[in-house]
Structure formats: C-alpha cells, structure tokens
Length: 321
Image (cartoon, rainbow, N blue to C red; front, side, top):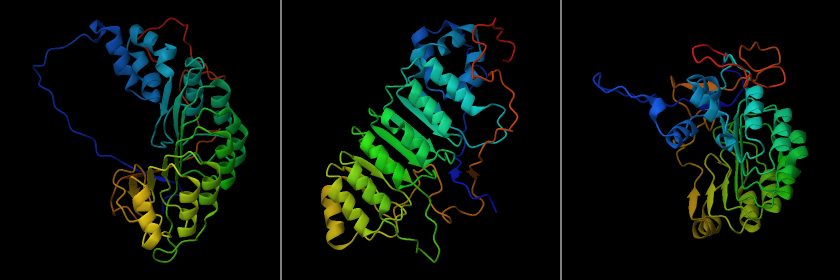
C-alpha cells in the first residue's frame, strides 16, 4: 500500500521527432527578448538546475528580477531529487527583489517558507499550495494579514481547516478565485462524513468570490445553499466528487440559473491534475504520491546554508555548480 499521501496523475510523455538534416542553430544568436521568452516558459527548478548553466548569457538573464515575477516550483514529490527545494525557492524569491506576484509550491511547503514569501513579497496576487502538509493553520493564519492583495488562492490536498479559511477570508478582501480541494474517501459506497463548516466559513468570509472549486469536499446541500447565499458573485462552481450534494429540485434550478460554469459531483475529473478519490484510478495507472522532506535529507547543490548561490563567482558553463 502506498503511504497515506496525495496522489498526482502522471501525464504521458509526448513523442517528438526531428529530421537529422535539420540545420543546427546557434541559440546565442537569438534576440535577447526571444531568449527571455523561452526561459520564462520553464519552471523555476529547470532554470536554476539546468538552464542557467548553459551559458553566461542565459545565467545573466536568469538573474534579472523581471524573470521572477512568477515562481513555479511544480514537482512530482520526488524524494530523490538532489537539491533542497526550500532553499532553492528562497533563492528564487530573493532574485525577484520584492516583485513576486505569483508563486506555486508543490509538496515541500512549510510554515517557514510561507513566512519568507510574505516577508519578501508585498505584491503577491496568486498563491498556489499543493500537497503542502507541513503548512499549518497557525502558519497560514500568521501571514494572512500580509496577503491583502491576493486575488487567487489554491489550497489543494493540504492539511488545513476552516480556521484558516476564516482568517484568509477576512484578510484578503480582493480574493476572487479560491480552490479548496481534497480527496474523496468513501467509507461505505459513496457515503462520507458530512460537514458544512468549511462551506459556511467560505460563505461568511469570502463574499466577493467569482470562482470556487471544492473537489472532494464533505459539504451537503445546506453548505451549498450557504455558499449561494453568501457568495452572490459566483460565476463558476466546481463540485466534482462532492457526493453529499444532490443537485436536484429547487437547489439544482438555482445553481443552473445563477452559475455560468457548474461542474456536477459526478462529472469526470480528466482535466484535474490529481487523483480525486481513493478509488478513481485504474489498476496499473501511473501515479505519484507525496513524500515529505526532512532536515536529514542529503542534498548536493551549490546553495549555501543561508540559501544563497555563488552568483558572483567565475562561471564556467562546462562545470556544474
């Protein structure tokens, strides 16, 4: 049995082919703005671990603060990665020079990292926390007041409760998009514990929401009604795997009339990156489950204990860090 962790779907690798006669191109001859555009399409880990090692030009571009308005630390929860993701993330945040607006953290987030993000970035608009089981209610509540400009918040497969929702809702008046996704765990068929506390917390504290995703939530029709009453601006509502909800009768009619984009509990989750319930994957399918990092994990990188790189050292692109 895999450990009790959040599972991530593996997407099949796309096949590509190229002609052996294709003319070789010198990437260094590309205009700088084209090179910048290429590098911006990479994730943070790819830039720091690979791209900036290619040549001096790419390394210099990678150190430009404008490259770090958005930080994407997307990964597969691979415990064998030979780098310290939290130190790497701290370094990327430092490179943004306070201009960070969008950050995505998967599998390794902690209270300390969240505090560092909010201390270093006063312009954060979008925050994505996925499988960050070492971020606590207390940790998120402490930094919520520094997230007053936040417009999008994604908390997927994390161990947080309604207390966090209440604090975030009060401190983030500009919040328009909220994802609060869990895995549906059936105890008897489709039966699951019913709980409307989170739905009520959203309804009471996030009145300006336009987009809400609640995959795998335990809310009932009462919780859904509270959300409809409290969030009058909702345009999209995702209730997939929310099997305690029955969209029939008057409640179903109200949802159909008011919500432009409504996802029903039994709608497919093909476009969702994670396994949405404890029995939703086919036998033999490729999945990856979250593995928490520990302080004892060995790392082999060029990040110092304080999280800094050897940015000013003489750089030889033929050598690793």
